[in-house]
Image (cartoon, rainbow, N blue to C red):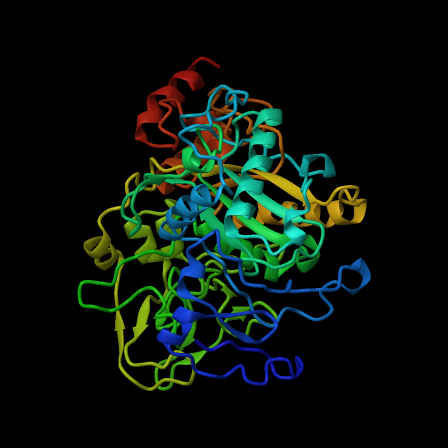
Length: 506
């Protein structure tokens, strides 16, 4: 695997062009200090074994110096279901996770009325400092050489405290810490708690009971580590785009002709991320943007310091406010936002650099593939883009040490990041989805009044936006709430009679 840095970023990564074999990757872990530390392969799977040490992306925690020098690379610490299963077994055996067979789950307040069906976040709240849930690491576990299971148990305790206080209203829980921990799992990581979606290349599982996580709705955890490592900028948005997309991707099997879509853990990217031979115009999930043919040259709209492997998507482009598009159309298919046909139509290019080394200019053969090839190798995505969940709610926890609660400066930094993230999610999902990052429960749809244009009345001015929404199938949440008379979760021909009836009644 090659780790890139921009020229002039310093000497810490002088050996960054070193090629690493898959066998070496199986027994070593690249740390952000730029050193290779050999470990037993079992360490990657066992919570009872000490986790590898890794420094934060940015070790300077002062607000005045934050992000003057961008991070040189990003290490994703994604935790696969296989790793989590092994970790739970080891953790229970070592006494680091309470045995679920003898430890009943704690009671939490039930979900707000409306969860379980199409819940539309009509008004995504602005995040304030009051929306960051503080949780004390009472034993200062994160200052010790903690195991993965000790970390997961701390995250479980914090999650259950959040659910007890706020109710079972969250699809995901995200974490920051306000100090530098002893070590980290990657620069950030996602750990899935439940999946029942097919067609993603990932099986069904539910780890909530085994980990002791209460409630019925949580799908996964995102750990962002030290808040001082991030700011409201493209870098943080692309990294969060990757971690949250791990809820759905990238786990695809190779195409039927053998072309791998996942990285090879060597020169062409990391497993559970896009293979760097794939040209999809950029995304936080590390799909590349190859430009031209003879040669094909790597480029794109990439985050500072990340060279050309973590880039915003140029098919979707930037929002009028300059927000990056952190997902490609193929990512959006896996996330349930676009149909297979829309995936194919939205991708200006979906190509495969057949014999590329994934890094230099490329003059070899280039092939193509489409949604049909993805479906043939992995099955159809069920639920599809019409029935899938489009609106999500994340509860955010700030873990702190005893006597050191989050400062106003730290809270305000996280608030700025999360408000930008809410807007980025909406833009990157083609304005078809929302991410509520406040503690308030998502606002359920209050009723269907036919007022799609948001003025003071339901009248003929609402006809055009209704027709546009039915034809495109991509109406925003507020418009869908007003016109979705058959409660399908989208505007469609089944809503026409309801719209006509309410217009005639005016």
